[in-house]
Amino acid sequence: MNALEVDNLKAGYNKSEVLHGISLKVGKGQLVSLIGSNGAGKTTLMRAVSGMIRPSDGAVSLAGKPIQREAASKIVRLGMAHCPEGRRVFAPLTVEDNLLLGAYHRLPGFFGYARKAKARLDHIYALFPRLSERRGQLAGTLSGGEQQMLAIGRALMSEPTVLLLDEPSMGLAPVMVDTVFDAIQALKREGITMLLVEQFAQMALAVADYAYVIERGQLAAEGSPDALRQDPRVLEAYLG
Image (tube, rainbow, N blue to C red; front, side):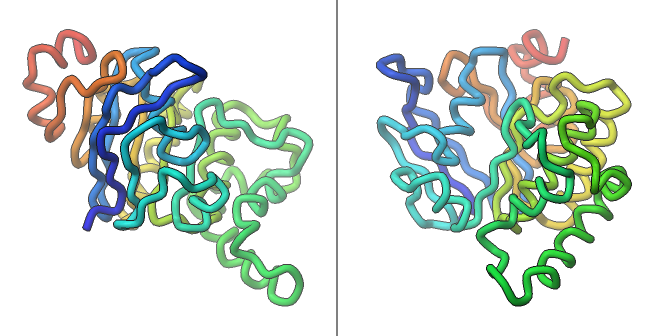
């Protein structure tokens, strides 16, 4: 059984259809990358999968359970976390408060809150030591790279079985891109299942077990990273 399965998914905004029947699979423990040009439909796909927008047709299954009609809040409880494009941290709150918000549905209201939160926080701080150094700092005062670490950490606080990462390198300095991708590699070694949307195709393929190429709301190619690197269309459009 696949951790995540998308079948003939169609979605868009108002009456404008962006996705025209997308199908893909992410096996348990796999990192699958989705590459494509700006406006191809990558972010729309992530939003439709995580429940941020309602698909107009098709199916999304999480560990075999249909979720395409579920609210985003329930999808999180079922085991999917979405780290969105643009980070979207809560600027007036501290780093630690942002992280705790990511675990709101897993933490007891009163007794045991601090104990249960601590174990997960320690894990995130080990993955991103810079967040530990800034745990009391307001999120809005962090650099772009630090905010991206925080966004990923917040998603991980829910202990997801599937993690959606949408453009984690967007707007970051090269050194911060490397730091973020080092963390993604560490998560992969932990066996966390991930669907990654990434503008840098070379980096997306370097960490992937399998990859899909999306163009104008439809899949244009798919295969192993090695196979896609040899595909003349992919080479010319994304790797040249």
